[in-house]
Length: 340
Image 1: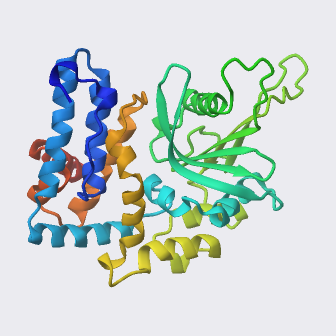
Image 2: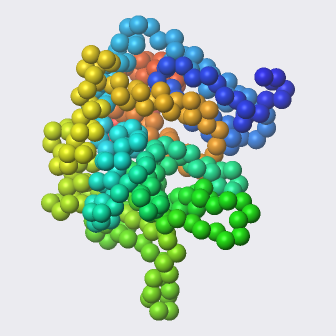
Image 3: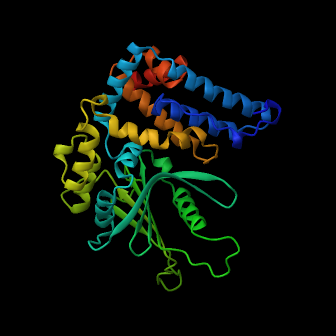
């Protein structure tokens, strides 16, 4: 590649086995590059991403063993309310995804035929976003399931944007008679984002003058994860917040979570299935060069990762060597924890 003609869209660093944390860091830098103006700034951001991968790949054997142990403990703390873990658990898993959608829609006949996670969708202007889970049922209906731990990530505009991405993906350029599938965008939120004290909210378009449904095939649903009662939906939310598969209500979810947390004790101390998921998607994470417009969500996720590692006893130096974060960033997060 010639430096004087560097094009950020063509920069595709070859990923190594440094792991999820370096992948996330490289992804953030790639996104930041697109928000800058000028080739020089873009070159600098790409260089930073490569430097981070080199740093993480040069971990000593001692650091690597300590890191693997921390990853193992981190996975033990994962819940389905952690979007990367839910994405790993539901990738290609029609059985578990079908259970979730059936309970949320109160439809025991619904049949899910395909599930993809962390897939990129782009609009007509080329801006893209990775959606946590996209499922399709036997009738061709689409379901986008999103986990949101921060209220500002589940706003009304965000839901509208997700629907537009799915519509754009299902329409063909120049097509006169557009036929779009019925689409559901489902936000499962940690708190009651809409603030009305309900366990679930269904948002539908209506004709204001008559009150009749407009019925354009788009549906937005918010599930309030803070209500965990003994209803079917409440038990589902109990499972989404549960760390131990043995304590889960639904076998479909317990089996899935148990595989990721308990299987393969002799291969990476139970992390192999999650590492397989990372290996499958790391090319995309390293190579992504789109601007989602929601960088704050990525930053918050990194902060949560560092908090988990610090809570599990990782030193500031190890976190820096393993993730590529600056020591000042790690110390700032540690100070926040002490104030809380």
